[in-house]
Image (tube, rainbow, N blue to C red; front, top):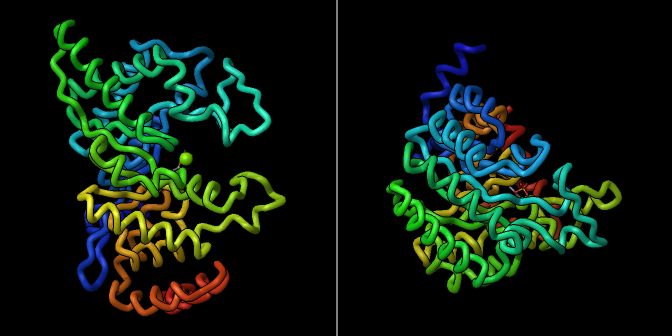
Length: 324
Ligand code: PEP
Ligand code: MG
């Protein structure tokens, strides 16, 4: 098995007709680095920084964060690592900082929380920049953007933090700054957001939740939560089209990237950078290597006319069955 993994690790995720798909990994634990690299992750598409915060018993200091981020960047260097600033709120709670709200997914979450706690955000940015100064492979990713002023402020904070570090004798360049597209308003504002970002990452979990108004964790409505809802197809196509026009690299990092049927739709749409859990990389790579991109295009055209997710899944599923 390990030998199979080794062989597959160095083979590209490329369709039989030459569409190369970059496969990155989602992580939040340093311990994931070995399985990720063994499975050929070409970098980290999503480092969920809330995970180390959750397993701590108080807010980690800048120094503690710096030590950790530095180890993470080092483990993957020279591959790029997209580190996301703290995304708590919603279903993600810190044991030492309770947020009680009646509508947590629409409340104090992600960038809204950290912009209201600037010291915390700045300590995180400084820690990331210090690690970047050593290893050079940081990309900074911002969650839950829904307004232009949020990303503008983050960029200013990063620039100021770099200047402050310079005064302390730490020379660090401004890393690429990207944002998650997971709130519908961000998807609709791309041309206005573009001046402040270098890349985008689609969070298909939250984008589905917010686009369909379906709680991603509520079992009562879990039958309504599907990344292949026709509105998601329109959204994903819109995002890719806008990003191409604006020259913004785009990856997708939600659970959708681990669902083989959904990956067929993503590849058909032209998504060529996916980030997923390390353990799912071999499965998705094998799938991509067995496909012709061109064969998927007529299915995509039919999918555009479907009125529900069951029909869309029924179009793409036979491809998997044929591949075994
Ligand atoms: C997402 O929303 O799709 C995503 C990748 O972020 P998270 O699951 O951490 O909210
Ligand atoms: Mg999210």
